[in-house]
Length: 267
Ligand SMILES: [Zn+2]
Image 1 (cartoon, protein in one colour):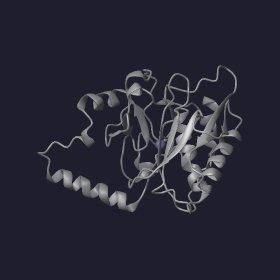
Image 2 (spheres, protein in one colour):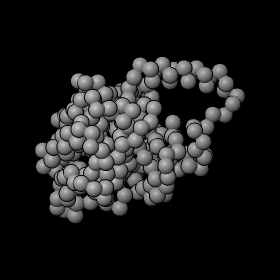
Image 3 (spheres, rainbow, N blue to C red):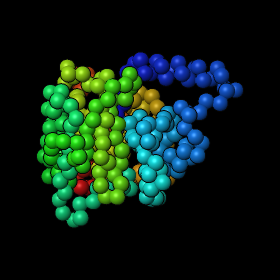
């Protein structure tokens, strides 16, 4: 999830202006090769702002694609172009027809992180889904939440399931998530990144401006954006999977009715 801020909007506008002044110079996004950009695009993700990140790439603000993802995500043509409905990737967590417990660990003892992780887990488990979450000690859980510090608009990032297993790492930016950030604001972003880990895409992926104010379409997907039946065909206000969020003290996106429909349908 990315942070929506006036400064970001101003910077984006300034960058747009700047780019338009030097059109003759080719401006590739942060040294990602054309081949990789083609792979990202082929998977249905936007190449706008794609940046190298550790052993892979960060796309659409907070989604980590490993090199394996780039070669391994399943192909699907089950796509509906629409507004702000709910979407999942073609890769989900396998529950083998039963209920699967997904363990979650945390690498920080910062009090609001502990409370927020427990709150995010509580929100999911309250829905009695076929995936359940449980916080455990250590660093070898199914999903490990790790903190990092970076002066950027990234609040947190995660990736999508592979091989029937959840993505195993959520990164949370302590530049934003200081000890004074409200638990519900932090829990909302952790729940959002957990949503990616189990296969959910941004509710507003076709129109990021819905939650980000700017940004438009994350990409004309040919794969990996499967409409979830029963979710609204209009804007899904307040969804936990909207692309942009906030660290304001009153920011909170518990599961809406549409979110619950989507989660219950998939799990
Ligand atoms: Zn996201």
